[in-house]
Image 1 (spheres, rainbow, N blue to C red):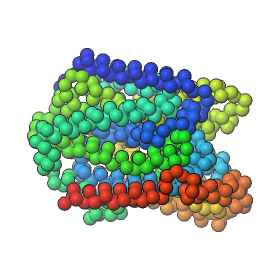
Image 2 (image 1 turned 120 degrees about the horizontal axis):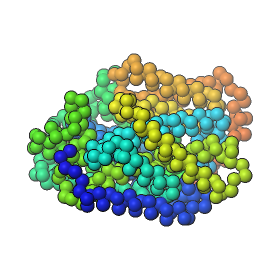
Image 3 (image 1 turned 180 degrees about the vertical axis):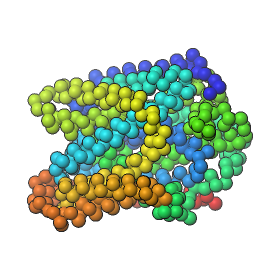
Image 4 (image 1 turned 60 degrees about the vertical axis):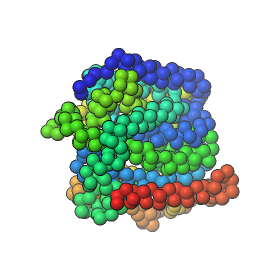
Length: 545
């Protein structure tokens, strides 16, 4: 980096961080129970929830990594946009099948459904898997973001972790899920504003949008790749694995991951939850398109300024391309706006961390602590313990960030692959509960671990198969195994099912909601999402010409 942050820039950053703490403290005064803390008393609006979910997706790794992928990564380019085509399709499945059911059951932890449908072992297995994977991934995220902050600010790694983590943990402990959601809305607003400013400045410096696109290498302008299938041809980012793999990944992430579902459960009714998912299905593509176009602008700027890449810090023998965006911001934006741009990076990081910490706390409290130690607690005691658990998870993830350095480079490259190893199998466990009546918890759990093991074998021994297909493979293996074992070993599964969950009444209430009670016709709205998918595909096809 060739320019340090000015005093004004630091004051902008400090003012933002102090505002978050004050806002979280103000929200904390209205909290009276763990439901207020974890699901906002179920009275949060659809728009804040939708924007919060989008903010979490737009992490620092995204706004730094996606432009680097578009501009510089081997095999990269605008082809990443076809991954987003799966989002509207996944929202249709969640709106029509999963979210109405979860809201009717009035869940706090999404994994409590699995106990009602199967047994306690199934619930705790999925909950424990979530805690392990999310805590580890969060510590790696903290590590990677702290490195960026250190390189930008010169604070040092230790103080970069403290600056990022301490403020996030404090406002998360105080504000609860409402603090997470409303701070995410603010953070997304700042982030989009800065990205728009960057895009406009890059477009002006390149001489216009078309010139900027022309400066991008022809193969990087490709937005659709129908020529490969990803099943052994070594083409990871072909259209079909990104569409089908993305569909199962997003269904699992938005429908079965506590860090995402918890916010959808915080709205006032089912209509509001579905509205949040609907808005996410419409708005996520424009957001991803924006930071991919920033990548196009950075590539054009590097072409017109050959010394730009040589000024990047080195990562071994090659430049650290993920720092191209912050390097451009520091050297091109005026004083004050540089501080705002750093706030945008902090915002992207915090929006990824705050929801995870709150969901780790909710899962721990609902699935473990209250079950074994919660009898006789008052609402205020539960609220206090919920905050303490959030603080503990915050400390755990921050401490772990200091011990993942030796493996972080490998994990950062493979973090999406790790998620794809398990996402399809996790979705299949929920699908077994929703779509079948014979299956039991033992079969679902065995299928879960078999699906993950099969994907691990693909990773180790068949690397030519796109990791995006693992989401599909894991789903098929887990679902088939769980369904087949119900015929091999069935401990009166039908009776057990009826004892755990009155499925006929539940299905009737959900069907009645979709057909009559809903204020919005969600079947028609789902058709709009399908039309949006067709329009986006057409747009990418036109851009690829």
